[in-house]
Length: 239
Image (cartoon, rainbow, N blue to C red; front, side, top):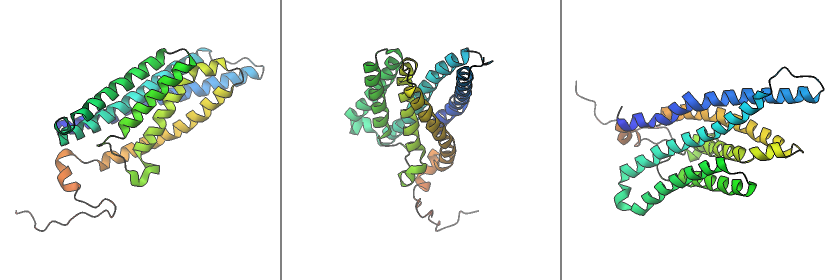
C-alpha cells in the first residue's frame, strides 16, 4: 500500500474507533432517558439516575461534531487526491483556494454553532454549516455511486450529517418547548438517523472493497462497472 492508500483508511478507521461507539452510547442514554421520563409521568419513582439526560445531551453534541468531523476528513482525502492527481493548483488555482476556504468556513460555522444561544443565530450557522458540507460533497473526486443513489454511502452520508447538524441546532428548543413538539421531532429524526448510520456501516464496508489501491487504478478503471466486465489480457505473462 502506498501513502495515499493509508490516508484513505483514516476516515473509516475514525468512524469505527470513535463514531460508532459514541452512537451506541448515545442510543443507550436516549433509551434510559425516555424510560425515566415515562416512569415519572406514570406516578412512580424511577430508579434510573437523572444524570442520564445530561449525559445523553453531552454525548449527542459530541456525536454531531464527530460525524461532521469524520465527514470532512473523508472529503478532504477524496478532494485532495483529485487536486494532486489533476494538478488543479496549476490549472484552477482559484478553485483550490475556494475549496480550502470552504473547509475553514464550514468548520468555523460548526464551532460557532456550539456557542450560539439565540435561535436566529443557531438557524443561520446550522444552515451555513450544512451548505458548506453539501458543496464540498459536490466536488470532483468524491466517490458517489450515483447509479444506486438509494444505497450509496455518499447520499446516505449527506442525509445523516444534515440530521446531526439539525439535532444540534434544536437542543435548546427541546428543553424550552413545554408542548414536547420539538422533543417528538428530535426522537423521530434521530430514529431515522440511526437507520442511516446502519446503512453507512454496510455501504462503507462495501465501498472499501470497491475502491481500488492506487497502483491498481489504471487497470481497474478500464473495466465496465455497469456490465461488471473487465478486458481479457491479450497475452499471458512469461514464466
